[in-house]
Image (cartoon, rainbow, N blue to C red):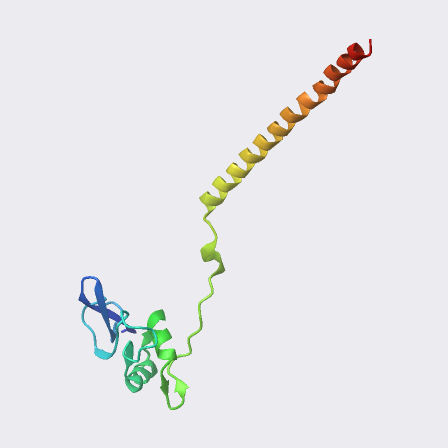
Length: 147
């Protein structure tokens, strides 16, 4: 049986309140759980002491038994200490590919860049062609002014 330490949502519509629970990984998010070990109220200020309440001893006990905290709960547990050290060592995840556009989006961007480049080249050629013709027309005008 795979155990998770996770959040179970409570509260009413638009007023979330979460219980930090130990549950079987296969159980529904808000369904059956083994033990409630804390609470989380996201509506309170981040520096409020009542925002996250966790029984650190129980959390450490469940982790020793093999329960895996979810990412959010691991973040909470990293700030809680038992016997002078954090219950969980949490580090910020690093996913550099997350911000990159997908393959199709990259193809569309390349097509747009190619079209813009072709349009700019055509405009440059069009601007260069009349510029070459203009000096030829200006030369006969100078001859007429001399006579």
